[in-house]
Image (cartoon, rainbow, N blue to C red):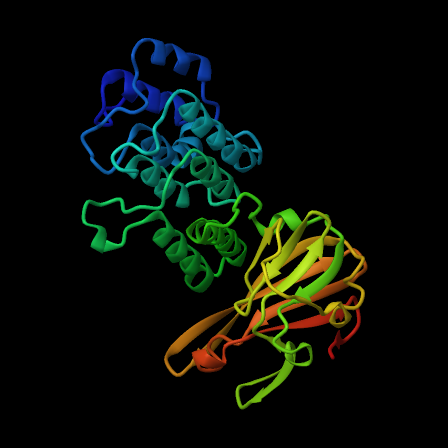
Length: 336
C-alpha cells in the first residue's frame, strides 16, 4: 500500500511508482486512466505531485533499489528528466496556483541529483513556462528557486569546497539570469560540455587590451596575469566562460559588445582540445576567519594546462580578482 503523501490514493500510488530509478511509465499511464490527477492539490500548499516526486527521487533511488555497480549516478539525472517530461506530456500545469506549481518543482530540483542534469531538468520546466516566483504566500521572505540556487552554489564553493558542483550551480544561476534579462538560455550548460572541444581563440572585453591582464604586488598577494574582465574560450559551436570569481560555464552565444582577441596570452592552448577539468582548493587563514580559494586546472591535449584561482581572503573585496598560470608538463609555470 502506498504511503499517504497528502493526496488521493491514486496520486499517492503515482508518487511511489515514479520515485524510482526505473519508473514504470506504463503503469503510470494506467493510473492516469483510472483518474490520477497530475495537478492534484494536496494537504501541503507548498508542494504538488511532481515536486513531491522530485523531493523523494534521490532518497528513493539511493535507499530503495539494489546497487548495481557504479551506474546509478549516471542514470538518475536522465531518468528524472524523463519523469518531468512525462508529467508535462500528460498536462502538468506549471502555471497553476499563480505559477507556484512550476516554482515548487524548480525549487525541488536544486537539491535533487547534484549533477549537471539539474540544469537540463530546470530548462525543461522553463521551456514549459515555469517561472522563478515565491514559494510562500508572503513574497517578502525571498524564497524563490533562484535564491536557493545562489545559496547552494555558495555553500558548495565556500563551506564544502566542492568546486565542481559549485560550477554546475553557477551555470544554473546563469540560466536564471538569462531568463531575468530576457536573453536565450538553452545554450547555457555545465563546464563539462567544453570537454573534447578545440579552443579556437580567447576573447575579453576591451577595457584596454594592454591592461586586461596585469600583475598585483600586495603584501599578501603577488601574482602575474590577474584579471577582472570575463574571458571567453571560443570553440566550434560554443564558448567556455570564466569571470573574476574563477567560475566556469558554457554558452552557445557570445555577449553583445566589442570583444578583443587575447589568444596570445594562451600559447599551446589555442588549437588544442580540452581533456579534463581538475578541481582543488587552498585554505587561507586571516585572523580568526578561514577562506577557501577554488583552484581549477584545465588540462589540454597539447600537454599545456591552465590553472585558475582567486585571491579571496587575501585582500579586501574591492581588490578581488582571478588569475591564471600556464604550465607545461614537467616544466615551470609559464607567465607573461
